[in-house]
Each structure stands twice: as C-alpha cells, then as structure tokens.
Image 1: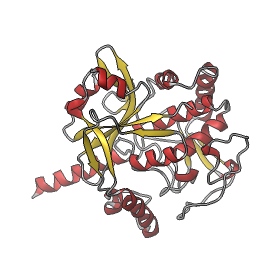
Image 2: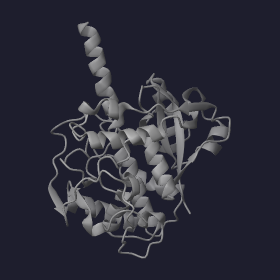
Image 3: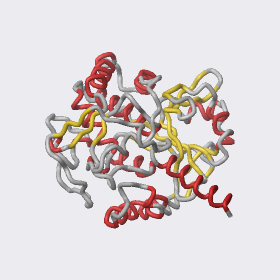
Image 4: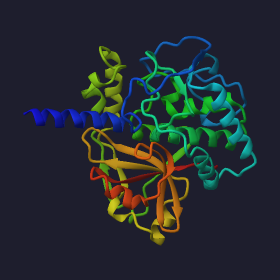
Length: 338
C-alpha cells in the first residue's frame, strides 16, 4: 500500500509538471527582481468583452482584445537585461521577411537560457510575467512568437513585445489565472482566433491518428494549484474550459511515423510548433518545441528540463520520443507569415 501511495503521488507530481510549463515546481526557483504596474488588477472570473485601446494603429487581431496596456499589471524578473536582449534581437532582424527562417533565427537566439519551471507562479494574484532570463517549454515558445510578431508587424519597443506576450498567453488578452491558456489545445485555439497560428492536420498520411480529448486534470486536482485552493469560482471557470475542450478530436502524427522522409519534410516545416501528445489521463500534451530539419532528420528547439537550458536537441525527435513511453505523437501548429 505504501508503494502504491508513492506511485500515485509521483504520477500527480509528474502531471503537474506536464501541465505547468513542463517543469517541476520550486518555491525558490524564481525571485522577481522588481515589479512594475500602473494599476493593481484583480483576477477577473468572467471573460471580458471590452475592446483593447491600443497605443498603436496596428489592426491585427492582437489589438482587438480585452485591456488597455496601461492597466496591465506586470512582473519583471530583470527588466534591464531582458529589455536589452529583446531590443537587440528585434533590431537585428527588423528588416527580415516574416517567414520560417525568421522563427528559427529567433528561436536560436534564445539558446542557452536556463530552464526554470513555474516562472509564471510567482504572484498571489495573476500578473503578466516578463522573464526572458529563465524559460520552460511553453514560455520559450511564447517568447519566440511574441518577438516574431513584433518584427512581423514593425513594432520595435519593449512595450510592444510585452503586449504581444500578453496576447499570446491569455484568452482575449485578459490577465487572470483562469484566462491563462493552461492546456495547449486552448493555447492553439486562442492564438488561431487571433490570427497568429493555425493547426495543421493533413495530409493523411502522415496524420493517421486521432486524439480525442478528455481534459479534467486541473479541476480534479485543484489542491495541487495554489491559485485554485479554496477558490471554487476559479475552479468552476477552469472546469468550463476543460468541458469545452473535452470531446474535441484532432489528427496527429504517431511517433512511429516520425522518420526522415520526403512526405514528412513536406508536411512539417522549419519553425512549426511541435506539440507532443500524451497518454496521461486528463491532459492533452506533455511538451512543446519548435521544429527544425537537419541532415539526419527532424529535431526540436526547446527549453529542456533534461539539458537544463534552451537547446537544439541533439537527438532526432524520433529518438527523443522513443525514450518517453507516454508520448504518443505530435500535433503541428504553423505560425502565420501573412
């Protein structure tokens, strides 16, 4: 019985790892250097229908959402350092065409940044966390996309980057815990609605498998999440998101089919976002990264818990996934270039 309890506890801990940006929570892992906010904002428990009052004339979907930038409460880990890095990358590629090569270039600029889990869990109330000094698998992809959107739309300021990061991370740009896109399927849906990405589910083959979602981990294990403890209203909203996702079906490529073939090279493009599907109960995906083709096959740029930093994984994706029995295949999300 003791061993069974240990195994149950281990699974629950692992599941939280998978759901919270692919990392093990650590109470001392993140210490924000400072906090800057114009107005303290309470977590909202209802979707907002307000229109974003953008400072710019950008007409993209990203600017038709929930909050005026001046009202967003932000936590910076190291604003001076991160701002310098962001502006350096944006200026370096400012004249670059918005294409897959740009996505790969930005993704490679972030190599070597330490892997740290739970970097978004540093506040008692949800705030937009800007931290380019520590990344996990989800925040890595979010930061690459936010920088890409700045360059694509001719935006060059650190404030523009923070704006796009918020839009990528939250439903309708609403900075609240239940509006954060905890499940990657929700992340895909929301960013598709904003015109940032689109999910690829054909041709068949290689998209020969179907994932039918059964999502409920957060609402059924609320005690594992500090923000959800003793907060039935917030749990209810998380559960509603889970209900909306559950039952949905998505085509994916089984891991047995991830070989270096002409078909796969024409189907998966450099710069595509790879979402690794999982057999773990209550979850949809377990890890994400960015596709990059090398001479020996498909690899993944990712914030790696194994390597403890952002890397261009030395193993092919096929080799990598064979080492993880619960990983069943990959869903493909393409960043829009137009």
